[in-house]
Image (cartoon, rainbow, N blue to C red; front, side):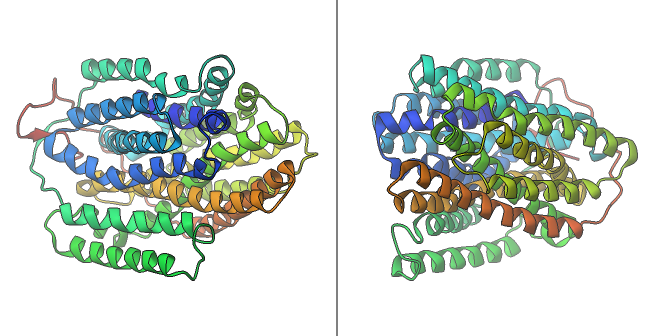
Amino acid sequence: MLAMLLAMLDNMVVGTAMPTIVGDLGGMGSLSWVVTIYALVTAVTTPVWGKFGDLFGRKRIYLASIVLFIAGSALCGAAASMGMLIAARALQGAGAGGIGAGAFALIASLVPPRERGKYQGLTASVTAIGTIGGPLLGGFITDHLSWRWAFWINLPLGLITVVWISVLLRLPAQRGKARIDWAGIGLLGAAISALVLVATWGGGRYAWGSWQIAALGVAAVVSLAGFVAVQRRVPEPLLPLRIFAGHRNFPLSIGILFVVGAITLGAGLYLPLFQQTVQGASAANSGLLMLPMMLPVLVVSTVAGKVMSATGRYRAFPIAGTALMTVGLGLLATMNADTPRLLTGCYMVFLGAGLGLCMQMAGTIAQNSVEMRDLGAASSSLTLFRSMGGSLSVAVFSTLFNRALNSHTGHIAGFVDGTRSVFILAAVLSAAACVAAFFIIEVPLRKAGPPKPAPTEPATGQVPTAR
C-alpha cells in the first residue's frame, strides 16, 4: 500500500502541476504524452514484472520496480525540455508497472476474497489520500516551489518505501520455476503501442483514413492475433487465455476496470485544468476542490467492503457504481464558464460514489472468478487492463480536447467545449460498463486463509506465489 501511494501521489501531483510545466517547457500539443506514455509503458511492463516476480522472487522484483520509479522521478525533475520529460516519464511508467502488478498479486495471495472487503477501505484510502493529497501537494509545490519538486518529492518518499518494504514485508514461500514468454511480451507491447498511437494521432496529426493510421491499425490487429496464437501454445503464457474463458465474471470485471482506469485518469487530468483555467482556482485550491470526488470514494468503498465481507453479496455494487458514475459524468458534461464551484462539487460526489463502488469491488470479483493457480496472472491482468484503459482513453480524450481548443479563438470557450467532449465520451464508456455489470453473477467468495508467511524470502529457487 505504501508503494501504491507513491505511484498514486505522483500521478495526481503531475496533473495539478501540468499547466505550470507547459508554461515553462512549452509544448501544449505534447501535453497528453506526459500522461499517455506513462500509462502506456505501465500497461506494457505490468505482465513482464509479474513474470519476473515468479522467476526471481516477488520482494526483490518489487523493490527493483520502486527503485526504477525513483530513478525516473529524478530524471523528470531534471528535464530541460518536453521531450526529455516524456522520456523520463516512460522510465517512471516502467517502474509503476511493477508497483501495480506486485501490489495486486501480494494482496491477492495474502488475503482471501471473502476477507478482502475488510481491507477494501484501507486500499481505497490509498487512492483517496493520493488523489486528494496529490493535488494539494502539487498545488503547494507549484505555488511555492519549482514544478520540478513535483517529481523530486518522490525521492525521500521512495527511500522510506524501500526501507520499509525491505525490513517488514514477509511473503509466503513456495518452490517453483517460471519461463519468460518473450514472444508474448513483444507482441503485446506492439499491439498496445499501435492502439495508443492510433488513438493519439487519429483525427489529429493524421486523418483517420490516412495510410499511417491504417498501417497502425493493421499492426495492432496482426500483433494481437499473433499474441493470442502464442498464448495458446507456450507452456507458461504471459496471460493464460483460460482466465478469460473460465468464467464470465472475469472479462466483465476487466471491462469495468478498463473504464474505471479511463475515468480516473481523465477526471484527474481535466477537472483540475477546468477548475484552474475556467473557474479561476489556484493550483492549490484545485487540489482541495477534488475533495468532493475523493471523499465519497473512501467512505463508499469502506462501507461496501464491510457489507461484502459480512454477507458475501456483491453484484449490486458494480451495477449501482457504474450507474452513479454515468450520472456524475453526464452532469459534469453540462458545465460551462458560469458553473459555480459548489455545483461542480455536487456533480463530483456522484462520480466519487460510483468509483468507490467499482474500483476495488471489480478487482475482487475478477480474482474470485479464477482458480488459485491463475491468481498471479489474473492480478497482473487487472493492472494491465486498468492501465490500458487509462492510456487509450487519455489519448482519445486529449485528441477531443485539443480539437476543441484549436477550433475556438476564445481561450475559455475552447476549454469549456474540450472538457464537455471529454466527459460526454467518459459518460458513454461508463454507460457501457453499467450494461456489463448487469451480466455479473454472484459466485461464493473464497474463505480459505492465506498461507503462513515465511521468515524471509528464499534466496534461491523459491518464490512467493499464491496457492
